[in-house]
Length: 278
Image 1: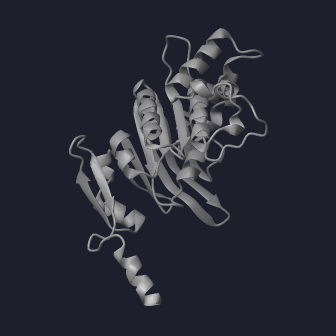
Image 2: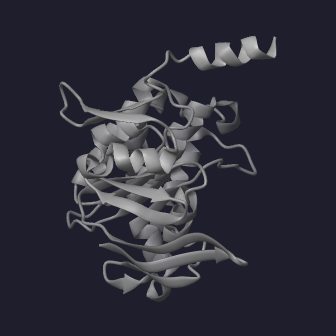
Image 3: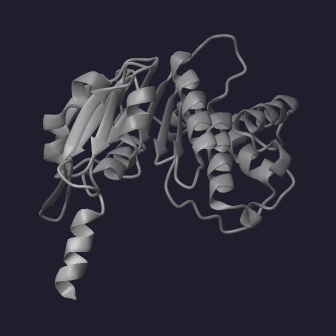
């Protein structure tokens, strides 16, 4: 489905991403993780074609991105980026409707509005439909943008065409309830024969929901596989430069990651520093 082969991205003489290669299979939710500056958002911008690789190839369904059209990809790929700014204020339902723009020429049809209704219910934003977007909280805006992306990929025909959903830190500003709702929704979307790539910082949520985890470290692909294969103490200690312990969740049987200095209570080092200063 989505294939990257020896992809580099460089700004002047600095390598941001180096020799990235991986394949995806339909039906997968893939969590992209790594420390700050590891290259996660850059990878998403390459796959969304906001950036062009310095070297290497990216292909979708066997066709290199260079040979696809923007119209084709608008039907098959939707993107939720960080820090979305809108130049004008619109009612929430119209922001969600923007996801349907590739599907109609002049005016939205009945089906387009039905899709808006459906994804609004799925993301819990239906009560906000008539509110102006600018008046929403950060978490509400995030859910509106997720609904827009889902609306874009909703198809009317019975024939199933695999779609690609790219989410760069979709859990920003969401409370616990909506973090899980977002991940449940996107995992369901993936398991309907699509692919979801999402950037996430919470490794335990990644372990719980992701089919595969892609771990970046200093612009390189450190590990790619199931949560149990990737979330090892050796990998995480190296990539995060912090003490890590990995156990098994007692109910879900996925990895559980604990961070910290396990020889001290969390506050001891800060108290010691404070006493030294005094």
